[in-house]
Amino acid sequence: MIGLQKRGCHNINLVSPTHYMPQILKALKIAFEKGLDIPILYNTNGYDSIELLKLLDGIVDIYLPDFKYYDNEKAKKYSNTENYVETAKKAVREMFRQVGNLQFDEDDIATKGMLVRHLVLPNKIADSKKVLDFLASISKDMWVSIMSQYSPQNKAKEFPELNRKITPEEYWDVIGHAQKLKLENYLIQEMSSTDVYLPDFKREGLFSQ
Image (tube, rainbow, N blue to C red; front, side, top):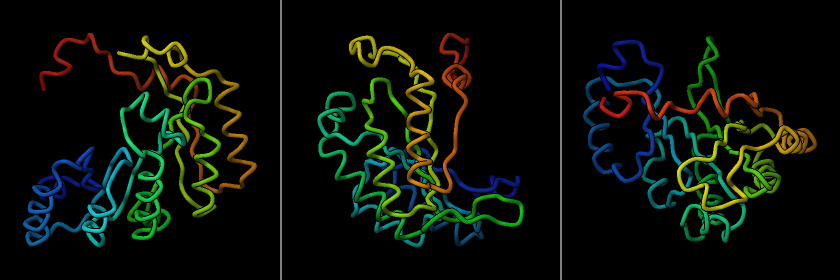
């Protein structure tokens, strides 16, 4: 982490770190003592316990959670999670309590706050409008990335209702709802993102590094 700071990185991005947090917290203590002072970013699927998040209060500067579903039965069916909605709602509220809305420096680089990602799924499976309703109830200024990049991979073929990309009509219906809610800071993706952001899984050496 100190090496990354010396190379000019803007933050330390901890990706899906939940199950490694005891070790990461020990490493951060050492890094802070050695002069680490760039923002710590917690990049998570949002299915985090309140107990863990409270341990991170004052340590994490930027939270980047997903909010995937607004229906527990769908979350169980597609992601094998229990009580997803209640868990994610509590997590997002706690993250927001700690850091608030995104703040930026003079170069428009985020220094503190929260940005929530939401992936629009085909056939309204994610209940996207309900997700946006919840986020707007916390703050109309919340930064939300409304993503169109869903691509059916792996086991998606087992669920016909998920085994296709979303349509422009499905995506822009959600964007229209964000506008209706008067959310101030939502990010839009091009429909081509479903291919642009998809790794080439057949590329030689992709997983060797």
